Image 1 (cartoon, rainbow, N blue to C red):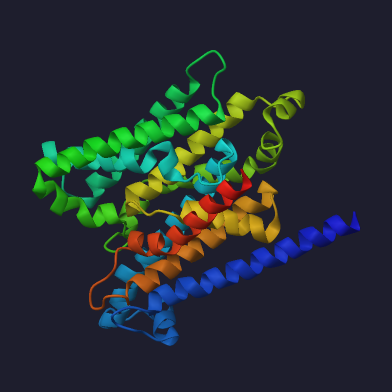
Image 2: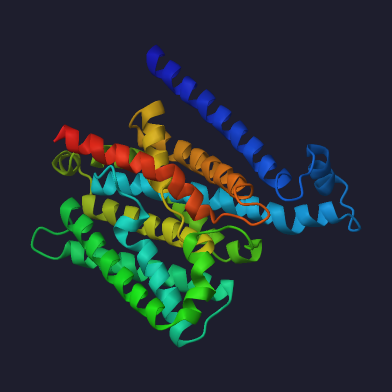
Length: 337
């Protein structure tokens, strides 16, 4: 009992430290950019706002929105990646394995090509719809057969749906160059130019899915022990998988809808967290949320300085960080076979 209390205490302390670092990254996101600002200026913009100060206006109307959106997207992607890896029992699982990114992109390009959709708000709802449709299709295909939903089926269904939507998207972009120009920066992933007005409509859904994920922590621990074990303990495994899939759709789909195709956060953060604190999802999920938010904030800060005065799409930054990690995981998986 004493050892258990000690372990939990260390995890609480670690989570507090991680949250403090997140606050530092958040404030740095507000302060750093093409127009660098001091911490005093940032604090003054909140405490003693001066509408005549251009720095205060930039902070209040642009950088705060950007930092908040990056925090929400990073946390959502990391939690969804954690749930995906637990659900599929695949260490390489990420939002793309459910076809969520591909479905969101397909709906946006289709609307831009055939219906002249052009606003970020339109893209947001189209992406969320596309993500939901793709995930529902994956779940349906993965449930076919007498044995019902299985890990292998859902992985194969996700790969098939992702390939299908990607091929359709490529075909439409080849046909219509105007559509490519209109959605290119969004497809690469970005939190630049996004405002809280885009986040607010989805925030209740994302918050609810996040709370659901936190509440499923112990249930996921039982499920990952083996389906037969979970059923023997009275767990309704199909319902648990359905709830996990719903949370994944909302978290990953909502993130793609706001920020575009931002990859690898959902892949690398859960692995880092499990390496630090173990496999207990009651702790893995909150740690993933905090570290995912911090990682995306750091990536966003870095994207501002790579090709100044222009900005690198944040999706390119996360790919640069995540691709080597993906290769490492794949090589390790082959060695273990």
